[in-house]
Length: 256
Image (cartoon, rainbow, N blue to C red; front, side, top):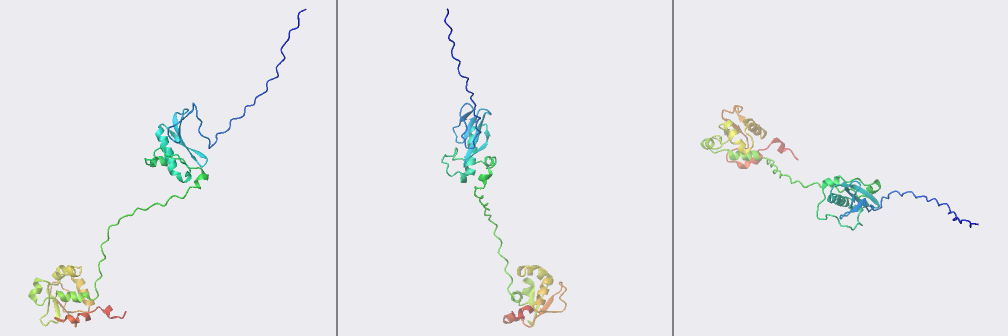
């Protein structure tokens, strides 16, 4: 009789293999390498083949912060340098040199950086106070000295000529024949030509007001500036300069 066929023993049922779910990306994980990502010759950059751009990232105290995607590798490197410069207070332990240490940071690149996470913003030192530039102001003219007390009688005394001929050719003011009065031969001309040189005005009315303040009395009608006008004062006499200290304004006699 034919011998029985030996069938192989049945294999045990396969054990079900349960695939573990992929772990979420970590903030601190380095960017993957391979076909999708390619390292850059600059720090903080890598090539992302999915979007065909250079991606810039920076790690600040355990946080990986994306800085943007760039067409040019050098632009991504400059974005990394800008972030290093802006947040250098939080990255004192980083020893990697900047990509472009001899180039300045562009203000536009700094402005395009993303904000830090809230937990890191509280660790930043306060921004430095804005330095106000020193503005060189134009020098102000020195203040005009105030007129010396009692200067008006001495100035007028120095202007009065000894005779009428000298007065007509010079200061238009002279002593009377007896030396007791001062005569303004042409009041209007005196105000226009002499007063601006001595008292910084050119009005006859201003001069008569000053004469009245110092106690001079008009001899006749002194309001007509086209006629000679004479004034007298008990201490304003020809050849008596020693009496000028007694020609005072009424307020100068009051005790301080």
